[in-house]
Amino acid sequence: MSDKPPVNQKQEPSSTRPQNQSLTRRYEAARDRSKATRSAAYARFRKAVRKDLEPVTSRWRTFRGKIEDNRKWAYPLIGLILITIAALLPFLGDWFSIPIWLQRATNGSVLARTALFVLFALGLNVVVGFAGLLDLGYVAFWAIGAYTAGIATGAHAYLEGGSVGPEPTWHMWMWAILLLALVVATLAGLLLGSPTLRLRGDYLAIVTLGFGEIIRIVANNLDHVTGGPRGIRNIPHPEIHVGGLNVVWGTLIDTKYYWLLLGLVVLWIVAIRMLDNSRIGRAWVAIREDEVAAASMGVNIVRMKLAAFAIGACTAGVGGVIYAEQINFISPPTFNIQQSILILAMVVIGGMGSIGGAIVGASAVVLIPEVFKSLDDYRFFAFGFAIVLMMIFRPQGLLPSKRRKAELVGASQDQQLYEAAGGSG
Image (cartoon, rainbow, N blue to C red; front, side, top):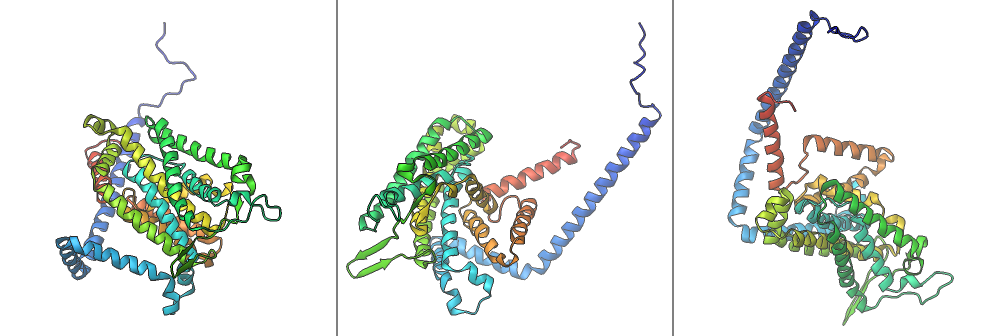
């Protein structure tokens, strides 16, 4: 039996193998030299910038040190100042001569939309950022809150031009719809979380995506309750009539919607901050880092996951009520998968696990397209390009949590050490 290979099988001549290996080594050496040159140039640039900014950074470090030393009263004072500035933004165009792009970004409608998505981002950040549970069906809870408002106010029974019920009007008891939507959305979050507790990563994302589509399809087909494809219209604006106080919310551009949503955002920030600093927050971090290790240390995985789903769901439910009352009209196409992905992008861009990051991310995603509205079709290209650059140069987000930033920096350093030791990436 012959040991020769088949005739049609090509063999590389042995004389060319050392040459190929030499070319590979030279290519790798040139690549390493280029990488080292870039790293050295970047280090020199950072050193020069740090030296030029030293007078400013030294004062900033001193200022931060004083704030940390007096954090019990300094943090609430800073928060109060920021809330006051945010509340006064709609008056910016009345007090100062500002450019047109800033006028667009500070009108009542845009600011209300920004506050609404900040509220949604805060809720989703609890699920994705704190507990590490990838949720792609978050828009379902927004829809549940909106349809709760439409049904509870009686607007679902009114058809303009051929009404089957009285035209809905606002009554003081309707403020309780916020609590009703909170309860209904929380129950929906528990309903979603209960059968999916054993799922992780992509599998959990697919299940939550399906849940979001189920809610939209049910709303589209349940004509007698949700209005079906025609939706629900004439949802009444909220009002307050107590003693001599008469406050009536009006059209879409009414600034009072922004202040109402801003108040809810502040309330949720305080609540989520307290949860993050409690045993529940530490349990969420443990589950996000290593679920098996967290269970072995006595963390109740089931209860903590359900708590994360419930808190995220009730946040979207409350926001959905205000959205329905502001727009006066809701329909199933509004609550599509793109909205869930948009809210998730806000959390990722701002920095997962960071309350400030959720605020900054939502504000950036809503306001940047408004600022570049004059570019027409190119504004979305510019916005997408900016996001790509940010993901390359700042993957931890615009305002990341300290823990998340340390994880990414540590992982990057470990990878560099591994490559320096000769490992293959």
